[in-house]
Image (tube, rainbow, N blue to C red; front, side, top):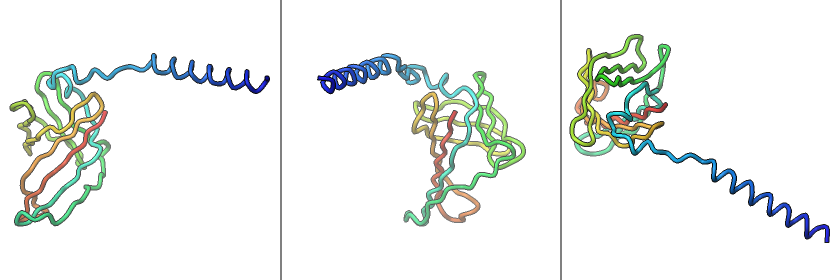
Length: 149
């Protein structure tokens, strides 16, 4: 008889804990906001991955080592201001704007950025750009960047 009641109490307690934990979970409503509001703020640069193609043939996949001075970040202001700092002492600064439904373009000094947005939530922002890179002459480089809060 004791084992029956212990098992019943254990099952009821476990059910209560699961029910309570599920009812306290908060839904992620970040997708409800327009992209113009979602990107605003400072994002840490978590990872930059390069995919290199020579003559249309994939030849290399690499992740750029981070050496922050003291931090690597990208910042989007609500008024259109932009800063990008990766492995340097001073940021590239300028302005940004959205182009179409899935691109963000910055005009900054000394470098401009043109990204296609892949993922945008309140904690994760992933983008890709395609072009040349002086480290890989004659190659086409896809640059995947992951930003987090």
